[in-house]
Image 1 (tube, helix red, strand yellow):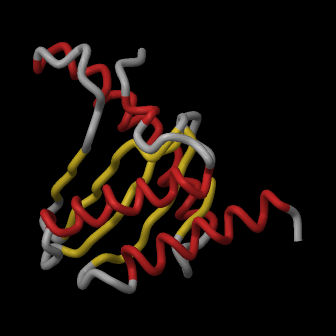
Image 2: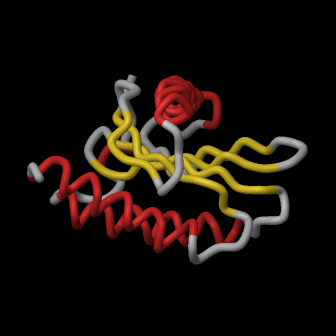
Length: 141
């Protein structure tokens, strides 16, 4: 097993234990690169779904960063992007150097608890990846 594959597997296990198995209503999670590539996923996420979410997340998080000026937050790091649907949520946040975590949850999930757990997961991912957590969140275009 290559070192890259081993690290991706370690990151996937973190997503499973910290989010999927620990929180009611959390469906799946994906760790994506800024340029829209899948780094790893929680267990059971099909490759096509992961690739689609990675591309969407890349664009979504870029839009979120660009919206900072409208909120007078141009010099403030992006902390959280939340999309609410009728039956669930997507929560996205910076997870390290040019890496983002996206979590899907059902409507009955506790979003506050999920956000807190995602922040803790990001910290742990940063340690495994050897980069500072949330370092990608700063103002960028």
